[in-house]
Image 1 (cartoon, rainbow, N blue to C red):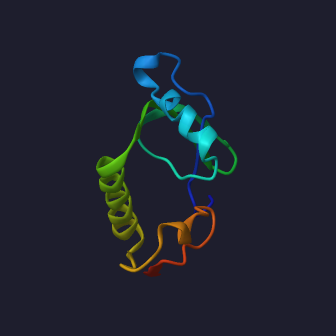
Image 2: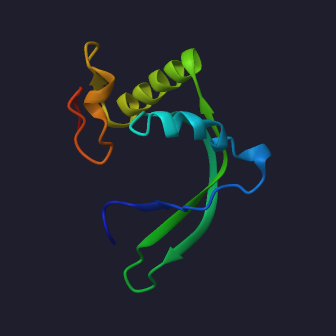
Length: 116
């Protein structure tokens, strides 16, 4: 069995406008395509695939509800995200880090220190 769990997220978004607020960022994205947007989302398990021989499983999540945030709400959400990273990995965001420094979520964030 592999050591790292595999979790993926479906590209599908909620069809109902009530559960998908991403349309509200359309104009801002056209004006500033390099901008970072902050959103809150709820997700559910859409599918679980299991390899019978190895026992490995892949969990596919689907966004159930997503809403972009602005201003103070976005800043608060970013702080919650930073705290969640601290709790999960034991690393602390440096207070002087520029918001643009960790733009690549797939790589090592340079404005965090410590960790397991």
